[in-house]
Amino acid sequence: MVALVIDHRLKAGAESVPGPSGGGAQPPADDDHHDNDQPLYAARRKIYPQSVHGTFRRIKWAVLIVTLAIYYFLPFVRWNRGPDAPDQAVLIDFPGRRFYFFFIEIWPQEVYFFTGLLIIAAMALFLMNAVAGRVWCGYLCPQTVWTDLFLTIERLVEGDRRQQMQADAGPWTAQRIARKGVKHVLWLMVAWWTGGAWVLYFADAPTLVRDLATGHAPLIAYGWIALLTATTYTLAGHMREQVCTYMCPWPRIQAALTDEYALNVAYRFDRGEPRASVKKSEQLRLEGLPAGDCIDCRQCVNVCPTGIDIRDGAQLECIQCGLCIDACDNIMQKIGRPTRLIAYDSEVNLQRRLAGQAPVQKIVRTRTVMYALIIAAVAGIMLYALLTRHAFDVSVIHDRNPLFVRMADGAIRNGYTMRILNKRLEPRRFAVSVTGVPAAVVEIVGLPLGAARNVEVGPDQSREFRVLVNNYEFAPPPSTPIVFHILDLESREWAQAKDHFRAPERPK
Image 1 (tube, rainbow, N blue to C red):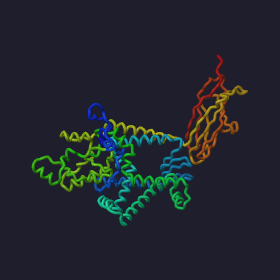
Image 2 (tube, rainbow, N blue to C red):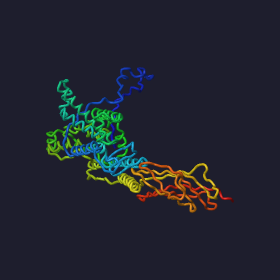
Image 3 (cartoon, helix red, strand yellow):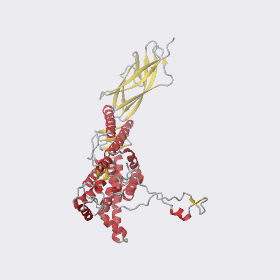
Image 4 (cartoon, rainbow, N blue to C red):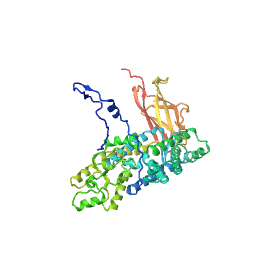
């Protein structure tokens, strides 16, 4: 689907050529050998994307503003969780071993929720690709969003495409140096703010901002800010399209996942060819000769952030941002021709138009339904697990040696180590009971005999208890399933843990 046109420019220098006598093979001349030496990677040429106005540019502005506003300001949003609990809406609390997201609280034992989120994210990416190609790359990818922001700053300081190209082609003047300096200072400020916002998700944001300003923040916070400042400044300011073309694996994965029905930014060559100037096209039409709508103005190339020509077909470098559509539409409106000469279209429709058939849209198909079902299933499982989870947990481990002890009164005793985990931020009392062994008497070491089997666990703590189960049944079976029940005396929630009660083998 994606045509990767790779010009190796390799001659047959490694092949042998006949000698003058024709009797044997002779190696190529040294001059030819040196001429065939080519670099492994093409040298980067600086791209000067031109600003453009239109539907897809407005969509990109909206996505940029919304996503950056969420990233930079979300740490300052408050959420009341009660006393002794952090009030930051989104917080990754490593010391407290918690992840807070508004009303949701994730504990370390629930790492499977993050696994579910990763599955949903992957399937959503596959679904977007199946519907509209690399729409993630063109609108939502952080590299695209921050590069857009850096390009905007560059245009505000240095001017648009033509002004930048003229300045770079000329000598270094005081004005040029000043503008370059202002641009890089603004880039560094944005990069620094980006790194600073990241660390705010790992501590109380207002407190950490004050500590950073006064020099009392942890050294690791300054280290992460410096690292993210450097990477943001480098990737968004200098590498730009190189990240998408060479560093990111998604373009290569995407090519294997797409099909002929996926919508991609495409040049409708059935309408655009043959190309000619406006006057030439009008003359050809008057003469009854074929004339395409494309006037070869190259505006689609000038606005492309990766510098490609969409008229050459689908290419790995294309991030499907749609800016070439806006540029082409503006030109078509000026010359009085229909818009969408470049548009989101599928390979099937491009071929159908050549055959004179009406285009079709097939969004709902096997792969899109499959991706949607997987997303719904994983989300449903996660929601069920979230709604039915307990604020405490219990585990029981049977003694390894000895498995059982025969008491003087004839009872068979088994020992267990029970651990109760209280995930709440306040102390809780739990009642312990056992089922499965009818004649059992339960004793918790440390509690008086005959007392209620109620234990207390501190806030956000786990506590171990030694539990002894005495079975007065005559000749019990060698292994009996036993269930330990734990009841929260305040919320009336319960949890259980299963094990076995061991006894001697019955005589045959």
